[in-house]
Length: 168
Image (cartoon, rainbow, N blue to C red; front, top):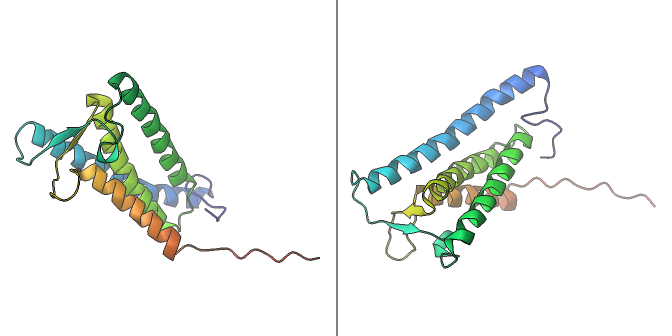
């Protein structure tokens, strides 16, 4: 975000080109969201036979013991804040930050998938069971992949601006 240009604040021509690029990223988020929701509904209706269970908590069942009167609003607020931050950051990001945008895009698609489950059903449907790991879903995979891309970007390709030396 070091550039003065972003997807929102550019010249008229750059703004249109940036909007077109941003549109593709948002479409990828929507595709991840739709894939997640379609597979989950197919499993619930018996069209897809995979072992599944409902996760009323967060990652790996964290907070599942909370009362639904506390848990559901808590996750709704956290989800709305996270989704708002992701979208804000995506729009503020400079167009040349493609790897960061990809990570945020994938993260957004997964976050929307699990948020929708929590909002509509009060729980998340998990169905991928590897036996040695807690059961998870496509949205969880997208969230993990998006975070991994962002961590990779920060650790290995981050551009560190050199600070100007102070004159005495």
